[in-house]
Image (cartoon, rainbow, N blue to C red; front, top):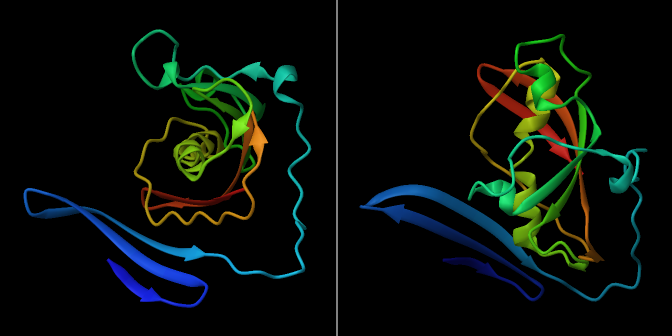
Length: 171
């Protein structure tokens, strides 16, 4: 459903339902406009390059699931096996290099970023020092300029975990 159509921006909503029950709602503001000024003022965290990072052991390859679609390298934080039995909480900073199924340099797409962002709960596990699983709620993805790359850095900043929900920001 197109909610508002403007000169440069459109606000839209998509509702997915099954058997008459709404199961997913997505809202989007889409568009662009000509503007002579641009820039990026945030900096990625100081982490080693993907080839200098250990593989992150999460999904195994060859099992017919997500491990066949992604490769992870741990840039900051602890391996899942290190926190499996419960350890001291981390500092809330967690970073993974992620390479999607293409395994070559390509223009990163919005679906790529959405897929990669769904690994944010791994940061909650590192922050609380034990396994954590949850649903992704009220995600907001802001995209400037998409670029060509093979690896994407998912830099997570956990803000809090409370009442069974985790809150954080990824860059």
